[in-house]
Length: 225
Picture (cartoon, rainbow, N blue to C red):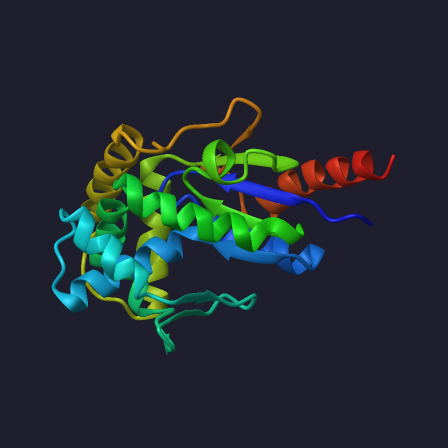
């Protein structure tokens, strides 16, 4: 069966990465977590004492930042496994801050498009269907209420042993990031015109995977006609 590309966009903590990983395992595709790439730059900026408000310095830092995403979900930055380090709430906000810069996004998009040329990729982020993979055969906008997303992040942090914010603080941060991602000038978070909206607020992971799988199966069938 001919392989296609799948674009999954949506706000922070909507479950994009978890759903994409399951779909990748189901179809034998490679999951490219583009948000992890911005998180790597945010983490590197934090460690290198580079301001997230200095676009030129961030671009220079990015040129020296090697990012490798593995099919099993591991993320390496300059040879170091940062899979856990990039998932803190502080790095999450930094990722949003550095992603607003036009030239940072331009370089990231170039890297992402190069990765997906061979087809058979599931890419998730905030501008995949609208900017990065505009020709993706399946586009999904995955969302959920702020309350549902905060609870998921809270439980995720507990499971990962990440201490810090209360449930209410997480909800406030999520709402803040939603506003920032949707309101930025460069590649704002928005649903592509040809994307299918999936609200997972009251859905299990299995139900979301099944819903998107139906779209993928239909698209693959059409490709073989």
